[in-house]
Image 1: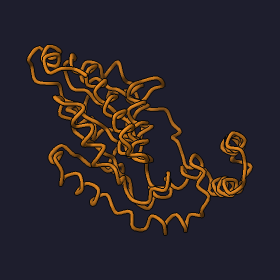
Image 2 (image 1 turned 60 degrees about the horizontal axis):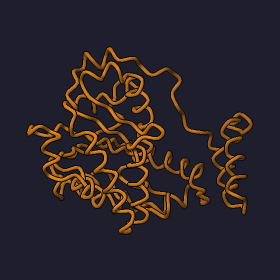
Image 3 (image 1 turned 120 degrees about the vertical axis):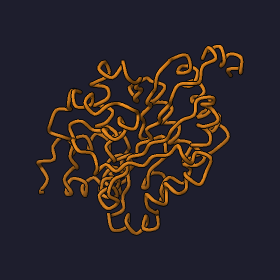
Length: 278
């Protein structure tokens, strides 16, 4: 654990740098945004430091642990999440200038995973742990949302593909009918100690899908002319799988298959969607 004197030494007595946590949400453009940031890391380096969940990174471990904690809020998981956040703080403190950390799992597990049927029920606890562990840095929390109906369809597809969800879409909608809305989620956070440090952005308000995250980068203080010069993502963009392929995987999830075998079949389905009717 870093002592207060060590923290003061790390910052040379200056105020801690600005820290922006992009907390997803899942299925709201996070992967495209992270690809775009990674693609333009050099161009952005003189303006903002960017950390994304690349393989083997502390950012990746932190987001994964936040999701695990939301499903298992035990003392052990709480300690692990705090330990990782403090490690991130210790790395960031000596630096200067703003820093953006992006991971879609920071809010916890989405609906459809591990029996979750409401919007991020452990989010306030995760934010409280991050606030405490990242001190004296004062994190800002930024979320991207998506039209709820479109988001639920995409979340359902993901739950079927990756989380062995076996119920039909109608049952999923019934299970999550009382999940709440984005305004409810924002109100929950703004009622706590991080009020004034929370920003919700709409994915639908992004003007250029080849340069995602314009609203987030504007919030971070980057001028629009700089964003205009960034290298765009190549097209075509990711698209949702065919409904018939998702239905095949859903029925596959209901079979008593070894998980490894199921995974191989799922990969074949994903790679050969043209075998399925539209």
